[in-house]
Length: 128
Image (cartoon, rainbow, N blue to C red; front, side):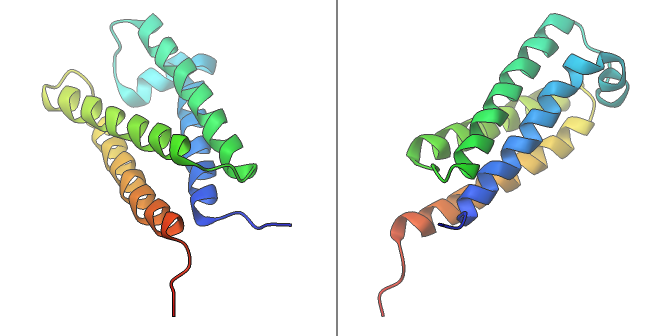
């Protein structure tokens, strides 16, 4: 049996991260608001939660089924980049709590790891 690649593990890790953060406001909005700050539109929080949950399932599935490909890379880095921009912008104007700055850091780490690992795996083994 093939072992899971490093990008497969990264895909599963990001999938779990997105699943947990996506499902949290759906299961217990009060604790989510307590940690992340007041929300103006609960429906928007729930919508983002649903989307993050789905993305998390897809990323985890790609990793565990050893199907990390260009589309997985684009989904993972695109979501992480989009969330980083939103985190930094709205934390910067004090619309959301600074806990979102921690999320921006986590998202940036994911982006860097994806670019390092995916490029390396696409290049294949080094020729000696």
